Structure formats: structure tokens, C-alpha cells
Amino acid sequence: MVARELSPASCRRLPAGLAGAWTRAYAGIWIATLGFALVVALVGEPLISTTRHVLGLSLSADRNPRSHVEHVLALVAHNIPIFAWPLLLGVMGAHRHRVSRRVADTVLLACVIVNTLQVGAALGAYGVALLPYIPNVPLEWAALALGASAWLVQRRRPLTLREGLVWLALIVGVVLCAATLETVAVPHR
Image 1 (cartoon, one colour):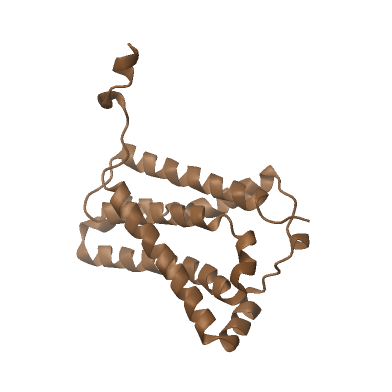
Image 2 (spheres, one colour):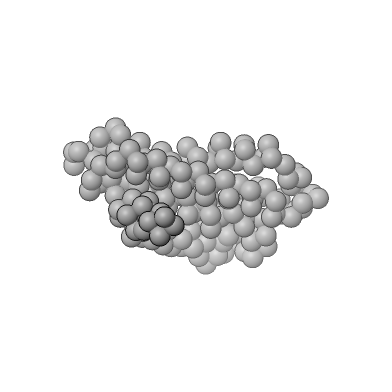
């Protein structure tokens, strides 16, 4: 009985196309992030001081609240819509027409740019001093890539309900891990 339960037929698989699309999206997100950081760092002081003024980050453990479950849940509630909305593009039928695909591509690219620009600019302006305050970013970028890869797959074929739910569960799980890490692993007072 144990052998039958572990047979390949009984194992659930990830949605088709997820691995390749996610890898491309994750790499693209990191390239954008590091590209923005490089631009800020290479332009130098004028852009660094402007970025610091606009972002207004205070890299101080005294400014971070103690970790608690409410903070994790607030971060999860804030981040799930940011990372999961591309799943809705297939539900809305954006994959069916060339114009709607281009609009969806543009909106998704804008979402990625807005997110990566902020983190990349901060990295360029604050340098390695920022790293202890952003241990969650690799996981958040993984969630952002999951959302983006959902659309990349949906451009070619609609997702089944099961695939959409698996994708959503993956996004929620990664966002929960990122929020927990952001809450407990940053310097605290």
C-alpha cells in the first residue's frame, strides 16, 4: 500500500510551464533591481542624495518595531494583491486578444518596474548598509516572479482551476515566509 501511495501517478505536479517561466521572471526581476542600483551608484552623489531624500529611510534598529504576529499578517495582507493579481488576467480573458495581451504585458512590466526601482534605488543609495533591513527581498522577488510567471504561462494557454489555486497557494506561502522574515530578521530595538 505504501508503494502505491508514493507512485508518480499519485503525486501532484506543479502547473506546466511554471519552472521555466518563474526562472525567467525571477532573473529579470533581479536584473532590473541590480540595474537600478547600478545606475544610482554610478551617477553618484546627486542621484544618491535625491534618492535618500525621496525614500527617507532610517537605517536604525531603534526605528523598527518589535516582531509580532499582527505585523506579519499586515505584511501578508498588503503583499498578496501586489504579487497575485496577474492570476486574474487569465480569468478576465486578457490572453484571448493581441491588444489585451499587450495591455496586460505593459501593466505587469510597470508593476515590476515600480517594485524593482524602489529596491534598486535604495540599494544604490544606501549600499551594503541596507542589506540587514531587507532580508525578505529575495522571497518577495520570488513571489513577484510567481505572479509574473502565471501571466507568462497564461499568455499561451488558460490555467485550469487547480493550476490557478496551486499558483495562488505558492504565492501566499512565499509571501508568508517573506513577511515572517521581514518581521523577525531585521535589526530591532
